[in-house]
Amino acid sequence: MNHKQFFLQSLIVILSLNFFLPNKQSIIDFKSENFSLENEVKAAAIAVFYPRVTVDAFEKTAGEFFLVKIDNLRADDIINVKHNIFEEEETKIYRQAKSAFVIIALDYWTEAGDYNLTVSLIRDGNEQVLLNQSLKVLARDYAMQNLRIAQSTVDSSGSDDAYREYHEKFIPVRLQSDNVQYWDGKFIQPVEGVLTTDYGARRTVNGSLTNYRHNGLDLAAPTGTPIYAINHGKVVFAEQLKLTGNTVVIDHGLGLFSYYLHCDSLLVHVGERVIKGEQIATVGTTGFSTGAHLHFTTSYHLKNINPYAIMEWDGEWSR
Ligand SMILES: [Zn+2]
Image (tube, rainbow, N blue to C red; front, side, top):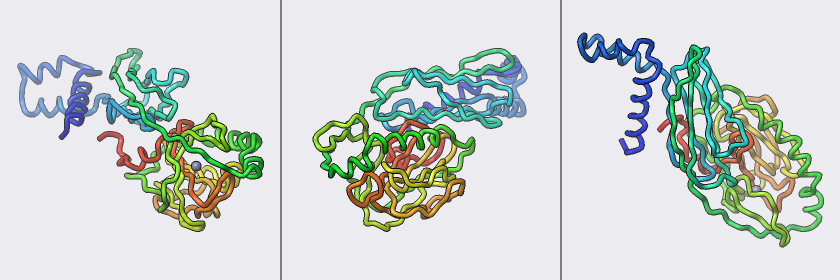
């Protein structure tokens, strides 16, 4: 057990023992006057069934994500999660019968620094803080890439009109995610390819600096190379756009998405459930693209996460 795991486990135990005991006196009794093995077991059972917050780590790098889970909830409990990493947005909470799930995704715009996370619970009209924790975000370096692209390609697939279409079609798709964890275990690499542009890279096109950042990975591979679903999920987009060419989006549930752009052919339809490793498309160079490659993006709703952070994760909520 490393230092971080020990700290997390200690945190869980402390939280479990201290909050929302209907009869705190009974715990004291177990430990003093009426101590017995039977009572110890009862105390342990109470601890297991009281609200418990786990955070997978307290320090992350821009492009990664914090995983926050609250267990042992009652149906009428209200959970509030507040942090100041990006204050303009309300923190989305995926709520199931006994658990609540929060992903705090950091992208290439997230500033390095010290932040704060508070998780509180309203039960029977009383609000109690379950966790008040500082979080650290570390900076990441981003590459600069200078592209030369034929003006005819810029005019046809990289135009303002192409960007307008992309935003109109893409933003609604990314706002809605199923309240189900479709993914299971590790996320796999979608294609065997060579990394040509990294996550977060700044770009110039024909000498002018663009105001966007490269939101995923470019993986070069020959046209026709199979592209696989990185985990189980539901296809929520499968069509051709001017900018991104033939495009697939998979909802993995609880706000996590994967995106496969510039495909040659698409093998799936909207609404279809796919399993990890299933072929969904082939590599191509459709849309605003200068050669056969897969542009692969992962996100938590609108926040584009570093795909390597997703692929290096074991898919579990705590570690
Ligand atoms: Zn790309």
